[in-house]
Length: 116
Image (cartoon, rainbow, N blue to C red):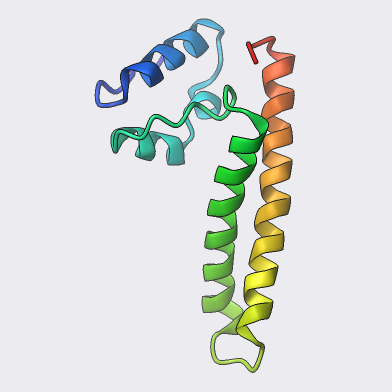
């Protein structure tokens, strides 16, 4: 399996060893965003082991912010559309993406028979 960065919090290192032992690909057990947060010392659990609400909030919030910023730069900057519409669309996109990703992580966890 892949090496585990010693800069990650100890609890994260243990979780990654557990997931490696279950044969889980590192792309599923340690996505890029989580690896960056772990290097900063933030012990956010791997998404496949995190709860539904935590996954929905983290992934939805980050997607909503990224999507809103991208839409502002590419489409809405300089247009006559109100800012409230951009914020509402970003909130909706983030909420939908967060719910879908949280459901996917729950399904993956159950299909691989990982602990709740």
